[in-house]
Every structure is written in C-alpha cells, then in structure tokens.
Image 1: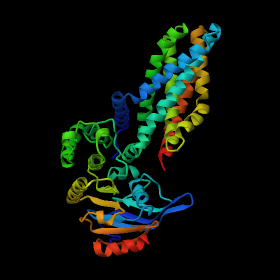
Image 2: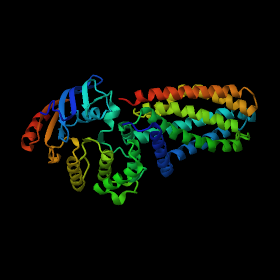
Image 3: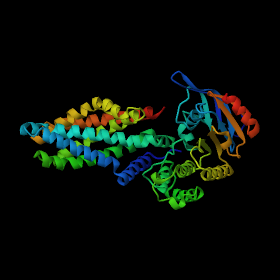
Image 4: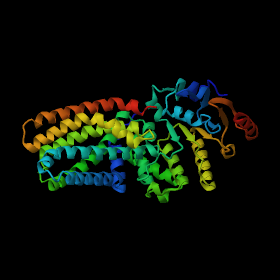
Amino acid sequence: MKTPVFETVLAIASKDLRAELRSRELLSLMAIFALLSILVFSFALELDRLAREEAVSGVLWVTLIFASLLGLNRSLAQEYDQGNLDALLLAPVSRSAIFVGKFLGNALFTWLVGVLLLPLMTALYGMNLLDGRLILTALAGIFGLCAIGTLLATMTVQTRAREALLPIAMLPVALPFLLTAVRATTGILTGAAEWQVWFQLLLGIAVIYLVLCLLLYGYVVEE
Amino acid sequence: MANNRKDAIIEVEGLSKVFGILPALQEVDFTLARGEFALLLGANGSGKSTLLRLLSGLSKPSAGSVRIGGWELPGEAMAIRAQIGLVAHRPLLYDNLTARENLAFFGRLYGIDRAECEGRSRDLLRQVGLWRRADTLVRTFSRGMKQRLSIARAILHRPDVLLLDEPFSGLDQTAAESLDQLLATARQEGRTIILSTHQLERAPPTGERALILSRGRIAYDGAFETSELAEMYRAAEA
C-alpha cells in the first residue's frame, strides 16, 4: 500500500501552510530580513544613483537568496527537531513526494517574500520592478533555488552547525541561478532583448536541479 | 524462544549495525509471533533505540536481515511501513497543529479515507483522554498529553506491529497508567508490540516475552518473569 504522490504532496504542503499561517514564524522572519536588507542596500548605494540602478537586480537576488536560506533552515529545523522527518519517512509514501511537498511549501513562502519585495524596491530604488516578465523570472529563480535549498537543508539540518553550513553548501550551488537570474532581470530592466536567453537558461537550470533533487532526496534522507 | 514459528510476524537474523567503527548492534536474532508482547530491556546505550529504528526501516542494517509480515527490509520497506506504528523518544507531532489536525495529516499520509480518518481520530482521542482538547494546539500540551497523542498517531492506521521506544519516560503516574491501559487495548486488538525500557520496574505487567540487550547483543530471550528477569537484567548491566 502506497499513498498516491499527489495526495502526499498536497498533505505536506498544506500542513506547512496551515502551521505557518498560525505561527507566522517563518514568513515574518524572512520578510523582516528582506526588508532590512533592501533598506541597507538602498542606504549604502544612495550616493551613486547610476550604481544603484545597475545594482538593483543584484540586490533583489542576493536578498531573495539570503531570505530563502533563513526560511529553508527554519522550515527543515521545525521538521527535524520534533522528529517529524522520521514521522514522514515512516509513512508509506515515496521520498520524492515528501521532497516535492516540502519544496512547494518553501517555494511558496519565498515567492510571498518576492511579492513583498518587488513593490518595495520599486518605491525605494525608483525603478519599475512590477513587470510581468520580472515576476516570471522571480518565479523561475525561486523555484530552482528552493528545490536545491530543500535538498541541502535536509542534509545540513542533521548537523550541529546547520545555520552556518547551509549557506556554505548552498551558495556555490546557487551561483548558476544568481548569474542567470541577475542577467535576465537586468535585461528586463534595461529593455535588452537578450533577457529571454538568460530566462530560458534560468528555467533550464531550475528544471535540471529539480530533477536531480528528486533523484537524490531518497539517498539524503536514508540513514 | 519463538524461532521459526509459522505465525511469526517479526523475524530478525544476524542483525548488526555499526556507526563508524562503533558497533551498536551485533548479531541480533529473534522472532516474534503475531500478537506477542515483548519487552526490550537494556541500559542506556545498549542498542534498544537502534534496534527499533532498524525494525521500523528508519535505519539500514550493516549486516543481517529483518522480515516483517513476510516482507524484507530494506527492499520491501514500502509494504512494511504501512504495518508499523512507532512511538519514539520524540513525539513526532506538529506543535502548530491541533491534536485533530495532526491525526488528519498522518491519516492522509497513510491513505486513510477522510471520513474514516475523522471517525478513527474521534475514537482514538476519546481512548487517550484527549477528546476535549482535540482542537487545541499541540504546543500547549504537557509531555504526557503529547505521549498519549503520539500513541494515537502510531495506531491510527491500525498497524500490525507497534514499536514503543521508552514510552514511559517523563510520564507521571496517571499518564503511565493511561498508557498501560492503551497497551492492554492494543494487545486485545491483536497487535504485536515491542516496548523498550531501561526501567524494569516500569515494565507493564502485560508483557509475556522479554529480550535483554547488553552492549548490542541479546543477553536474554525468554519468558517475562519479573523476579528472574530482574536478576538477569542486573547481570546483563554489570
């Protein structure tokens, strides 16, 4: 007897959402961090308007990456500290379904932070970031980031120095996302046609990472 | 004692587990018949939790084999998982969900129909004395209440085998008595139970079989006779 994948994914993602709506622990942490980051960047780059305009896509993606790191660490720690990861593994469900359920929850929270960031940055940086193409790029980037982040956080959460270890493990792996997402975002903001190439590349990397994570998750959670 | 019985539900042969160079379990062999209640005794660090993790499929053996209900671990783990209920050291519950929501979530993971799950949850919450707190967040529960809910979670899918790892630790007298009653009910329902404890005096009187683990090896496998067992247990601990 094996519980259907879709049912498992839905159960885990909706459980995460329900628990988060109640505690607001993760979202508030991520949102406050993201808000402070863009404020700090805004003040630091205040002197040079041109530099600020050039840096806006970098600021957006660095903020999103660090906010997602915070969220991923907390999300998996909540699962691990109460032994709930064991409870999930004890159930007759596929490991991939557990991964997708956790990944969707994490991605949703990071997307919400992205939704908050775009209008705020539009106001603070004096550039229009409320562009459909940019929202699509943010969706694709966060999708890939949270896929690899969920896998790595599941590994690092079992270690003592998990808060420090996740960024160390994730940042090098997230570099392809950062590069392509920043290029695509800059292309959209400056009106360059090449943004599409970078967007397609970003999408390709996200899909490859997701497939790899699906294949590897079972090995990561097995003792 | 019960080796090679036709009605065996748990068959363990030459089971070993090594962490790095440290052997946690060495050449463990035993068989449990369907409906049998075995007490797993041993001092801290004797390998009880490791054995229960191996039986539940949460950990892979370094050597040896485990068969549960005719299925072999780890190859047929999916079939075995549906037959096992585990009560671990930690409650395996979500603090930010209510007792009812926790059971509903695990019910979905075990593929239990929603209406059926609601009915079972209601019955179990009554049985464990938490019906009045069904819609209370688990984070407000005491250790004893969490433990009772943890048992409800473990038997929600009506497993054939119930594994309990030190379920009495941290429980007050009332909660421990309530747990004794729950175990008696589980026995009446024909579940095979392995209960680990390092406190012989806390072992429930319903036990019929005792296994003593000492330094990762089975030091005693026999009938549950408290007076003899106490002596054996002291000898194994020494």
